[in-house]
Image 1 (cartoon, helix red, strand yellow):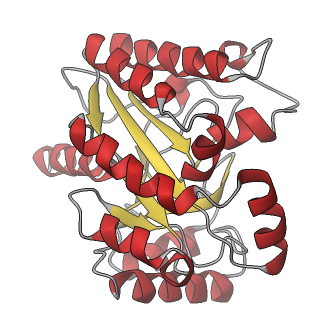
Image 2 (spheres, rainbow, N blue to C red):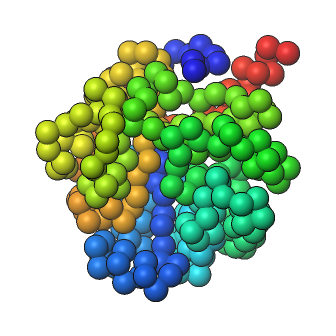
Length: 276
């Protein structure tokens, strides 16, 4: 899969998935691992992004309106996009149609209640081939007024192979590439990896260098690079935000544009319109 357009520079998107405590198991296990700092970290992150004029994209669950209400309200009222991460993280976009419908609509209405204007979905879990094999779910997403989804993530595929592409239904898929922070630090026993994703250590400096290398690759190839991050994981492993400081500075030094996924969609939509 190749980009459907030409552009002057590569792009880099910080995708932040906010996963909240929607079950007793998650509250006990997630919080015991990551602590209770995520809501406070989110507010610090918003300030950090504003101070450095960095674009970013947030995805939240509908349940987050109940659990992390104030943090999500501040995002919804900010200049940063807040889109759907479904409702509970217990359902994926590959599951039963009715379950997906319920999750989508519950999340949409709860997030809308705090002022979020939902335009797309950042999938829960992410999937090696995205929702390519689910035209019924693609049609559902389009019927509800969304025009893009970010559901594909596969560590056996290079950045060049993980570029945005149009599904047969017309829905735009915007994959995430490379390691996510969650998989790198906590689920790193991957059976198969593209050669550029193989590392010797799983520490913050190695993760930072991996992301810098991906940014450099995006710049040289004029590619889109979206990384899947989690405020809860960063609050534990990098509370001082040195990782974010280094990778955003590197993007600017490489001439790679910091964007959100809505901007990626808008560019592809403009190219498609011009081609008609």
